[in-house]
Amino acid sequence: MEQLNGIPVFVEAVEAGGFSAAAKKLNLTRSAVGKTIARLEERLGVRLFHRTTRSQSLTEEGRFFYERCLRAVEEIRLGEALLESGRREVRGKLRVTMPVIFGRQCAAPILIGLLEKHPGLELDLSFSDRVADLLEDGFDLAVRNGPLKDEADTMTRRLATQRLTVCASPAYLEKHGEPLSLDELPEHEGIIYGKRDNHRTWVFPTPDDPWRAVLPRSRLRLDDLDAIRDAACDGVGLAWLPCWMVRDHVAAGRLRQVLKNVTPVVFDTHAVWPKSPVMLPKVRLAIDTLARELPPLME
Image (cartoon, rainbow, N blue to C red; front, side):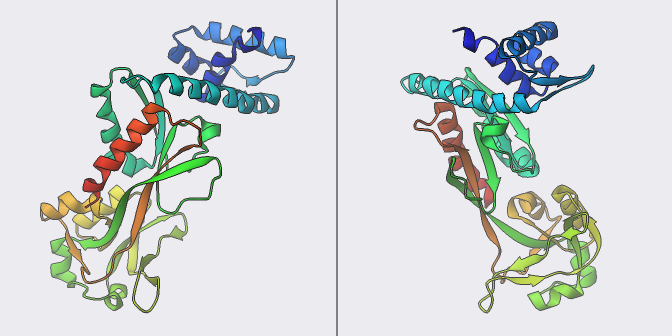
């Protein structure tokens, strides 16, 4: 149908972030992408993109049209899912968004491992701590840590449970002593996670209070968990981190877990995907694999 001419190129240009990036993904020239968009604009009678010599951004009309095109794309994906459901081979591009550090160190290696077993599968992984809008941003799947917002247009599945622990280097503990209770934490140096003036308070569930907030002294505040772990290994102070981040360092003797008698904070990791009558086989494969392989990594 003539009405569909140019739609795939338009959607790819939006999702890829520009004509040049879309051209690479579609194996076209940038000029061909530009001419296709121009013909589509002429047929619709509106301008879809603001153009400069270096970039393109959606106009208000373009964003309105893109949101409607996504609905058509989802119907096409549903049709593909119905066809693929009878096939044994999983194929197609799977777009996944995940938190930066957790994604890079835990989730991404699991998903990348699927490529060898499924030659028809393509992965497009995005690492960001921003909570993406799956439909608007064109993602098939999200991996999210912590409490979830109530979203009527998504479905969820718990993948694993994470646990936070307080740890420090043997050198720090030898010099400053080991905290034996939460009451002793304010007497110690801590390496605090925070962005700008928003610092994360350390909280612990206790018998008398669902959440007890405790914060050690701190002369070092960092906005990167890897940097906090490295600073703890160097003896700067106590760190409050997910167990999976420090497991190898504890095993190697670079860090020691403390306050083992204190109930730790635990939180869940979920898979989130757009609600659909039929789950795409590639999405089901990714979720099932993550649900099977993530929990051992969290111990």
